[in-house]
View: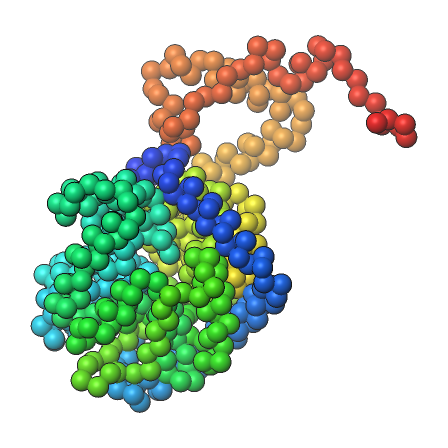
Length: 472
């Protein structure tokens, strides 16, 4: 499943219980959305912030070629080395080459979704390099041998009891479910790692063109330690992260924290202007399918994403099935938009259909990405281009559905066949599970004793008349 992911809602997604995801995750996602909206409601001009952020990102994405060159010029002038990678595989080769040139044996990693996208930990392991996640959520899922289930809170699916059992099993610690005690255990085990590490890694929340600065925001202090303690710092940055000027940074810091974690501002905001004297700084700027998004005018807006995770928390589908169900690094509504571009419609053509199109994601997006229309656009592409949705069986089913709904008699006949199928299904030699993911975890509906609604309506003789002026 490396780099290419697993099929949506399939058994290969280890850890998923269909059709319900973790109860802890659903509760936490709903609580996060409620807290975020309460905080945002206190700011009367938050919608103006959203509009401004949308316009800044629109300009930035439209001028990526110029802004990225400006960013590289300004940060290399301060001693940093910039590398360009077209694919995740190429980015892995660059990072491994840097590590091997410096005889790196251990790496401490701050949170980076791009590194997850690259499957970088697997690349390190294959080269005999020990890489340790230091973000608490990432640390937990790494200990558990799992993948993150959320782009901001990777261990959203784990309860305090789950973490206590994990620490007892993997670290030999006495069991506890008390939050502060669990945090203290993680801090104690990680502290030594920062001191011993040969290389530190980070992601990048924003790259600022006019000053040659990249920004990392966090709440735990692990990013600061990962980038300041080891003698070598390697940062990973997607091409879409660049913005024109440092004057626009407060705009994004205000909306990122409020939409992502319900804070007015994250605890730590690190600005890197270049290499620290006596230490090396390398920045790997990664495409990995982003230019294919850029080339599609109707999908380009998805590059505005600042990875706050608000759309995941608000999505009823994500709350129900969890992040693993999507099979890739980026789950939820925004993942259903950007992943098909990254891995191709052949591999991820079903993801745009993993949505009810309720519009909740659009309402909470701090940069006003029109995710529902993005999903509809990709659905259109998926059924008209080579993808899992462009199958003769799929077309035949929809043609049959269309034929059935064009006439009352046809509809009645189809419903009679469906009822017959439900009645005889329990006596068939094969189980309904064989019908696919839709039937796993679901029971066939029972046929009401009175039959269809139409039959009940005729039998009761109910006759509704248009309401008159005096009708209550």
